[in-house]
Length: 249
Image (cartoon, rainbow, N blue to C red; front, side, top):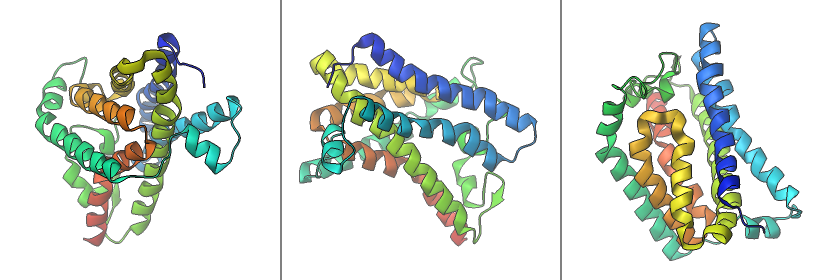
């Protein structure tokens, strides 16, 4: 495994961020103007670009001449057996993330009032900070939820691609290579770059910064990608819970 230095690290974070920017601020806008429904727009402009990280992680893994068998893959991507300490880290990490989200939410409301940080008007509701998430208990992307279990299934599949794509790319492939280059400062550099990756959610950057740094620190210390996958999935499943409540009615 080769070290991933500063300039290559910037490149490996900037390309996915640039693709996400293009998907949200160009493709989403064009589809909105063309009258494409919000559900299809969300899938095409947001889900597909972020899912490319899953493909990228597998391509990069193979390009480094690793074999596609579970033992080798799990070792390279740090998919280790979860210990009691790992589960404790999951509990601590998810608690800190939720706490930071709640305590720093005012920063997003403050930033959206600044023209540079304000979200564009064509955002679909699920990614629009001006839309109350509790509205997802009745409708989701223009779809009335009551009894529509297929919406929850589709959203869960979307979550799987998103979470495994990000965690395989950031923590499975990139983080171990950065550790060879940056040593004890890896979690700081990784956390800052991961925060800036989310610059397409520029109104959330002050919320994301401490969360991304703490997340990176835990993964750097424990060296188990399952911790990131589980925490990322739990935190990003909040909209799914609201959707399920809406389906149940």
